[in-house]
Image (tube, rainbow, N blue to C red; front, side, top):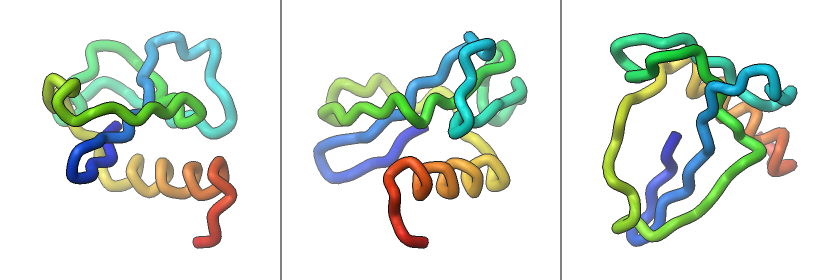
Length: 82
């Protein structure tokens, strides 16, 4: 997952190690849209901001329902008011 600014991007780690899923992680099933080969989790508790030039490119995209859940969970993790 990617949140983009002018010079930096904020990334959430994605892992196939679903046995370590936390309450705020999002489970993704493989699809042609997201490009995943195996069931994976978006680790929202594992965020990193890097220079945009270090990002190789987009490998896939997650759908609207999953994006809504990501937003909801980020609001919870970051203790933001919706």
